[in-house]
Image (cartoon, rainbow, N blue to C red; front, side, top):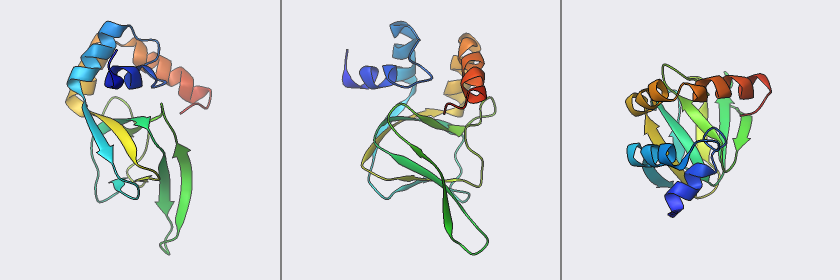
Length: 135
């Protein structure tokens, strides 16, 4: 198994998928290294995509009216964030910043929604995880 497929298999949302489905996601997604300190998402830099955190740490935070940052969550290997019209894991007022050199797998809205149409069990599973407080 190559590194990208291994890392995909470690994402909590995808860990029960068969290898064939992981290969489909591998082909549909873009692997991108992100340097420490890079702002991945912000209200000004909104992107309809899911980001699968393969390696590294990402801090989700908000700004108050005075511009002070408040951390919402710290994500680590295996977490996902972002949004599509089918699934929203952050909102449009959240910033995402790489806390370490990070590897992200980026799955665009169209690609993700096509995959979900063929694998509806992922949405059901994500709903259960959210209900149980997992990210």
